[in-house]
Amino acid sequence: MKKNSAFATTCLWDLSKSLTATYGNDKGGKIFNSAESILCEEFLRVNDRSNKMIGRHICRNILPGFACYRAMLDAGICGPEAVEFVRTQLCRSAERMERLCKRLSSKKYAYGLIRIIIGGALKYGYPKQGWTVAILENNKERIRFDITSCLYCEELQERGALELCPAFCDTDVVSYGPLAPAVIFKREGTLAQTGVKCDFCFENGTISK
Image 1 (cartoon, one colour):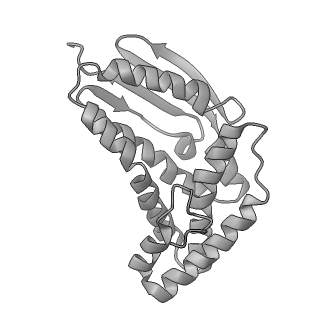
Image 2 (tube, rainbow, N blue to C red):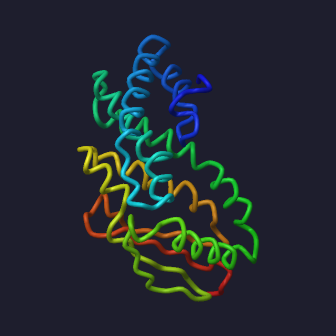
């Protein structure tokens, strides 16, 4: 990918390579160029809700995923195929967290560390301007919270692409699933799928049942 690409500092920094590997140099290159044009246009109308972290989520994650998806649809690729392609790319971007969690999977201190990380993430990484979060439990056995409004759902719905949102949700499973057996990540559903809530649960796997 060219160094000055609009995707270079986003979660889909390697998109050009992935598109050409999947669809060939000609078609893949055209899709990428279209996606880049869409992304640049979207950057011009970002509403960060007066919060830098909101802007980071939108510019680094949401808009790149949407731009790729939109360009693929415009190229005649069917919706399910386009969603699956973007999902795969987003999950690849979560591999760094996946590796960290895998290293923690056998550590006795993993739950305590994850408890600190989740607490910080909810406080600073998911501000109230973009998410509504209800903490249900936070103790030595489990961390449990519900999200009833989500920036990702809202931004994608505004662009007529809510069907793409589950692709972003799947990165949570990729990231936190490898914590087992030290920490067990559970989720029954997401706001994008049910329209109700995303339920998150991290259980301490080192506590005897």
